[in-house]
Image (cartoon, rainbow, N blue to C red; front, side, top):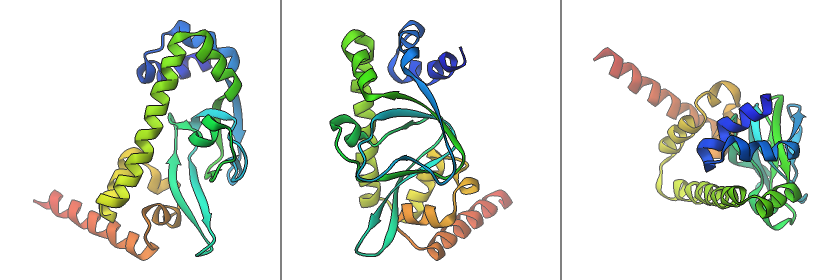
Length: 202
């Protein structure tokens, strides 16, 4: 019942699934604990599960051989789907690492079981379409943010999506996501703090 309640809270508003639709799927969902520093999925490994984060926060990153640096491209936190979507859809090796930055827990459904739901229950086929649209939007949104937003706007967007990320993730990881150095991130934080203070004093 606990899993049904949690999944209903995520999937009813996302895809219009009914509690009966979700009940049909319950036998395919599993819980997995992932300790801080361990991985949901690794580079060059096929992503075989679609997950929902119930506890914790993850970073998606790749290793840049040209600079020797790890570069963060996404974060996933509570209530969000977690997957390397292209690897999952096409079942070929993933280009990224997905690492837990805290002790974490997920609910996940394996690839084969999700496709069984698609084929046997029409509402789940609709869920699959909406899921693809969701990740397409996330991917294109990330690309457009890098093209059209400045660093401060990207930072504010990150805070909107993950409101308590500053308390949970190191400045180094956030700076990597924004494509800046720690010193630049500190300046952005100070500028925003000064602006907020000035606004309160008016």
